[in-house]
Length: 373
Ligand SMILES: Nc1nc2c(c(=O)[nH]1)N[C@H]1C(S)=C(S)[C@@H](COP(=O)(O)O)O[C@H]1N2
Ligand SMILES: [Mo]
Image (cartoon, rainbow, N blue to C red; front, side, top):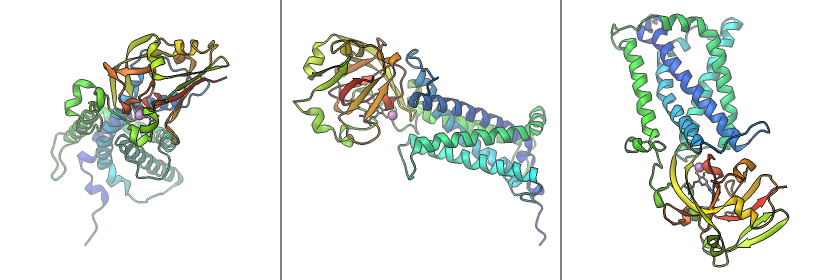
């Protein structure tokens, strides 16, 4: 039997017209994902030149929601895109002259890095970590690999892409494959369905279709819980009668019982918890204004503030709040949420809630607050 040449298996559906359109959508999704991911990284590990504002308070909710939604939408787009081009991935010679070898190497890196980013990201939103490496650093480093390979790929393919985009889609159904218009429609539909499946965890009116959103509104007091008091091992220390919040400011140090905190002037703010995993929920928080609490201890002369949780060990037990957020009126040490005493799982006896911050930095079960010198 004579083997069929690979080209004969490529149909109009697998041609550059569909591939270029699906690729353009995939590129756009990856670009949104990359930029919003960088922002999230810089907020959590701020370089000296980076300043993230306190307002609008919902900005991180939007950027991180967009990160997870665009990443999820990219998955069906990538699958269809690979389907449109895969016979070409195996054309001979596999490597060929140096230029061709370079181009193919960049495609291998691009495909590998993109699959890696989308799978680790998706599993992370599901809070499933079947790997040994630390998610954030690897996901961050790999983003540069993917975006670099994408830039090379685009530069190489630009002439083909431009021609392909200027040509109409093929309506002729090819036996066994279909028309290129259908391919593009299927990719678009897949992306929309995938996007809708997660969007509900951050867009309230889409909640009912959010089949892929693991935490979209359930949880005590109408707010999802990332890690419970039991998982954090703080049930006893949080309920302890002798609980005191230690606050250090201006060279002074003072301890507050929960009753003393409740005796200070209380403020109410409406602020979202916006988890890096993409879910978010707005709530009404009541508590002490951080600036006033610091003022009750000593003179605040500026500087970032460190928050330490009763939770020992683990990487979520402390956070640093930049000065810009320290002096913001909306930054509270919350004692209540949505009209009730803070649930143990939401950080009782008290927790930090600051505007426009990733959820991971809204430290729960506070043990101490200290102005860093
Ligand atoms: N001490 C402590 N604080 C924490 C966490 C934690 O694991 N330990 N999780 C953080 C994360 S990742 C999020 S999204 C928010 C969630 O707050 P909630 O559980 O009250 O909704 O709490 C943050 N504060
Ligand atoms: Mo989170």
